[in-house]
Length: 128
Image (cartoon, rainbow, N blue to C red; front, side, top):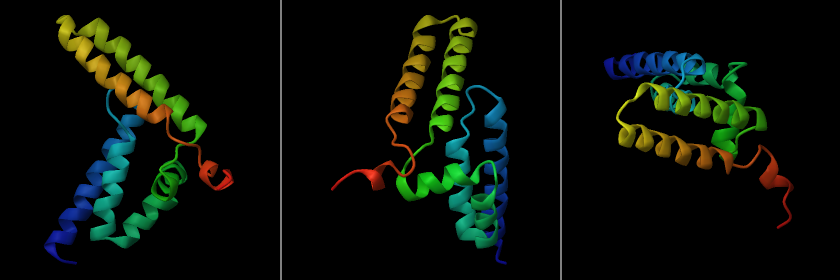
């Protein structure tokens, strides 16, 4: 394994760990970290990338996103609930209201993007 591959695997491991933390910490996104971890792992270690895809917690969502750019209803609800919690935390803890409003506006844009993603398999069932 080359130095570049080792760095890619190490970066993937760090990103995967941050993604896991994002499940529990508001304002820390899970999905972007998982997708970035998968991208790095695919370059550095196909075995690690396969492990991420096969992971019973993160794998199904990642595979649905890769194949169809789709999110399950459960994933959407969880993400939107965490975004709402994050918005409340931001409003309570950032005293400079223009900054708080800007962060919340960004969270709202992310929420709209997530809410408008199709469910897995939805595109296949639509008539052509």
